[in-house]
Length: 260
Image (tube, rainbow, N blue to C red):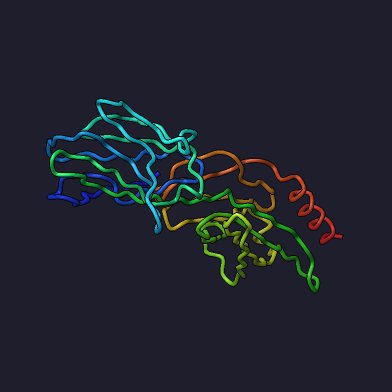
């Protein structure tokens, strides 16, 4: 989860909160508000705000304690209760949770002062890499295909031994749940140099919020990435290591046929 924290001025710079919170689909998200100056607060209220209405989610007061509205009890609870600072957690965020949230401090005798946090959700899956060796006009060709699903639509890029692979084609497919599947295809000539060495072909998926996931295949060994995570400067990099037997066998069969 990435947070841009700023001071929101509602009444003489009294409230500090996060203006924008970005969270991955399915993770827990904390929302927090605090007063920068001591005030006579009687109650704190959290609301979910839409264009049409504001819906009370939770309240806290010394007299009545903490209360969660019935429609939010399954996934909302207090993390910290207090009249000067208060925080809640939204568990396993869904697309329906993408909204803005107000925290209201009911101050006596001034009335309510509020701060607003907007929640932005993103989703990105591991890229799926497919490679197929074929013969075209007597020449060996590798057909490459890489796809990834996410929201907003991720950007796909790939390279061969850290050199950018150009002249590829990209397709976009919108899924019923609102996510986008991005597919990139290209062809690579199977040169003697490529076959004589262990060549790494990498596919990387990147989102605007900084999360990054990668997968790769080695030629001619046929090793592909799967299920192990690592940290990268731009976000999270996922790298997999399993043997793609079908790819390896296909490439070896091609090499044997070429020598006959």
